[in-house]
Length: 216
Image 1 (tube, rainbow, N blue to C red):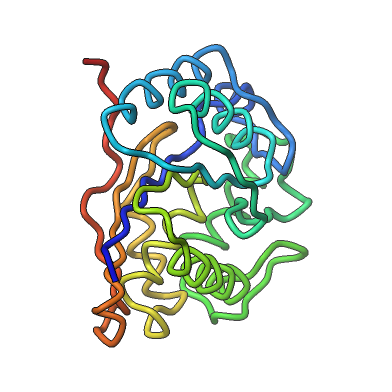
Image 2: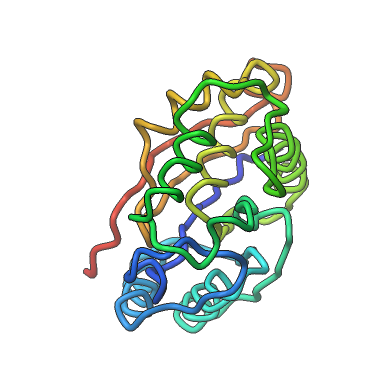
């Protein structure tokens, strides 16, 4: 029944992030991204971290490996923490491309039904269900302090579901997502309290959002 703390880390900057290219599953860290991950590892050394759980995407796995070098803890991988699958039409294209901007605005900034899908991407409902499963997995973790390496959009969905559960809908998420940006290598700290399982948030609390790692 002891509380458990989770340090959600967005992966470091990637080569495609730096080039402002919309990514799919592939993509590795830039030199800046590796340096960011090293700083996060040094920052997290002050906490009694017991394990790292990472998305299966290469950029997250590379970030997790750098963190593990500093923290000396095992790394586990789970597809549950992967980034939202983008539509094929935008992958590999510039974020400045007018057609990419139109599609992304339609997906992320316009109000639409929960089951809306532009083409072959994950819908809001798909990601919401995955966030539910991810939090259920974490609530069963026995470790007191765990690092989770994940991604920008999925982290925002995790937090939205954590706070609002089944009451979160696509229209609400548009507003929450617009005002909450997760930076590369940002750290978001949450706690799970098993004895509060029957509270509105099912025992979850957000302690801090998008912290920056600073070397001691």
